[in-house]
Image (cartoon, rainbow, N blue to C red; front, side, top):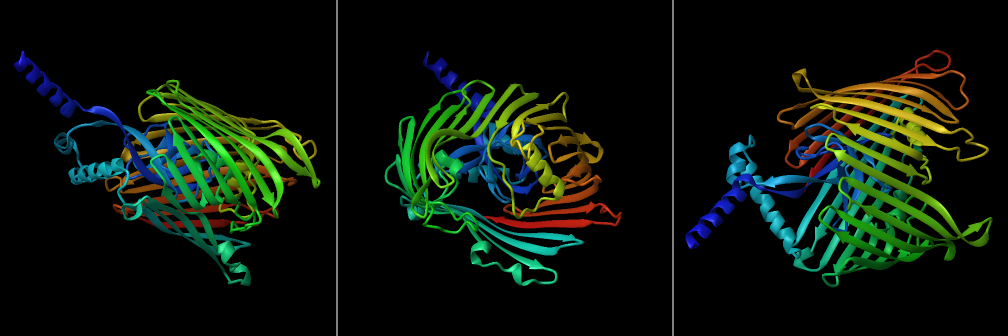
Length: 542
């Protein structure tokens, strides 16, 4: 009997080592490019990521869903936003993939990579250190970007330097730090005195905070920080306290809001509030609900008081629900204080994935539209962004056969203003992607139509992409034909847009990205009115 038991143990051990166990692993990438509707995320490779998966932003060691994968290549994912959290180029994004954990010997034998054994050893050490929770860890990213715009009216170049640095348990203590800082300056051709607009316009501090673990369940933070449980209010300059008690997380904060105009520190914009969050972790998924109440002041007088509710639910198999609401409890209308309950912001997103080949989502967006006083988007992308964001939106991703994916999007928005926006807005988009063309090419064909009270038109496009040198280089060419009527113009605008993108992993932690775009069109007099844009980025992780 003992011998049989001994043989059984050996068999189980061999089965685990040879056939493996399914577990989850987090892999990190970074946003390399952003358009009006899509966000591009670069990874070392996209093995284990599928169309319809969710990509996350790590905040306070928690995963916050921010993107839904709509297309992918061997090192890049294309995603659509599913949250209100602001994202920028070089922001670190995390994917959660299912892996089959086998022994190192078996993986090394099957792999084509010569450094797999070393990588696995490093990952094993990192995992152990992460599990200990008190080891000192430093990771970050330094990037330099250049944006160049050339047209008949403007010739300028903008440089941007980003530093993201996270230090956990500094010197093996309970003290941690996080930062995300950007410095930007303009060069016009010829140079203008307005190129330099002061340090507050050049230096943007999106995050700069210290965190101290009072205990295993209590955290005290000081500085500029966005709280995961209250992400909708943005960054807070001040003191934040958070306590975890079983399935509940609660906390409070007091501080100020960044300045409206240049994002600098402004103590006159005082705010304080408290929140409570309930978290449930089960086998099928998790459920998180947050409720917060805030009081915001201007010149130390109450300007707004509101409540915020956020809910994220993935307890049902293949179903994900995310929603957020804001209710004004106090506001000033024509300088008259008013106490009332008014729903001022709504966002609901429901995603259902009945099969691996099909993913569907339905969303409703009644948040305020964002109007940029400065943007790197071209004209048609800016129009699409304003036209398609609000209202109802249906999205479906289908994989009818291997290597092919088909996406369909449709949006509808009721009139929002009886004087300026009296016509309902409708838009539709469809794309077809195929990743197994001759010469290892992948292609995506897109078609978009939109109509609102101020704009209407169509955009057609096609792109080809290919990986080189074992996926270390990814190149893509794209062509779009835009035909639209904008504003009060009686003549339609016709644009031919050509673009070329390149992403090159120069070293394990060093990446170079480039995007060049040219727009060809004629003005109302039939004269050429062409424009060109170029984006370059080099990024070093450490």
